[in-house]
Length: 473
Image (cartoon, rainbow, N blue to C red; front, side):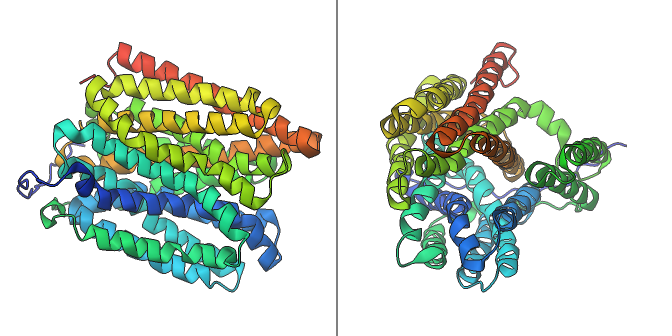
């Protein structure tokens, strides 16, 4: 079926903003920090929530699952909506939804309401994680793109790493988990205020097109099935395999529907022309490695070296500190040496760090942990700045929201996959050997898998450059 091209009306590009780079990107960076913090903060609070409500860990894991499902399912539709209705407008709505959900979560009297509201919070985060990357293209000059993406990447990594650190420190204080979650409300309000500084001329790229209901529905079912199969493993290995088979068939059906749609949710032909599929795969690999760092070390540090929640939080704080110190420099390096080179260098650094976590940390303890955590975070800054710059610099103005949504979708799929795989690997190791030795074995097993993922990512990055799957600048 021949696709009909819909008419588009583009707003004129605004004059070059004379303000310094940081002041232009700060509003968007603040949104990324809050979104990433909201993603990682609650995970470390799950034991306290389970104890407060008197429920089991499998039950309380629905707090995380509901969030991941809603944010992942809505990522691409939100990007498409933002391309049509205005990116700043949709971003403000998403931030408002996030703040309201955080407020209700902080006073939730039971697990059921907490799970529902956490899913609503994930809907807001879907906009908060994807749209700032799209808006960077419109707010900065091309020769500043790498530095701007470095700031955005640093903000994302800072928020993700700050969550476990802040949660570990505050959950042991008088605030408890209720007060810790409530902090997301005033932080979100600060980001809302800063968003007022984003010029109105950047707010919209209006489009007239029909809604791809079939594509949205199929994608939602596919993502929900994938997340459910990996996190809940219904029916054991047989049930999980069967569900993943259905997910694969659903994905093939979705591709067929998108190819035939007059106004598809994702223009697969345009994706092929842009050549961003390898970059999406790299985003999946990078987020898989970083999610391993987010969820496994808190368990290892408390069960292995025996740190309390406060000292565990301090140890995890090395991540956000390094993210701040290296993020802007990573962006400058991208501008100087090019995004393909920095993407590969960042992935190689992350892989070396993952190997250090697997081999050195179980032997040398906290000191080795601090060094490898700093190395991993620095590598992630280089990777994110390079990969995001390579993709967003190739997307047209009308596809910025959709493309950034797909990048975030790939990242979320990495998060979901790592959460399921690493939980299984760590639990298997600690079940076979209890105590500090079991925690060390779990650390080795999980980061051994992360190292394998890193090697695959580095290989893909090298082949991507060799065969020009994403042309270099």
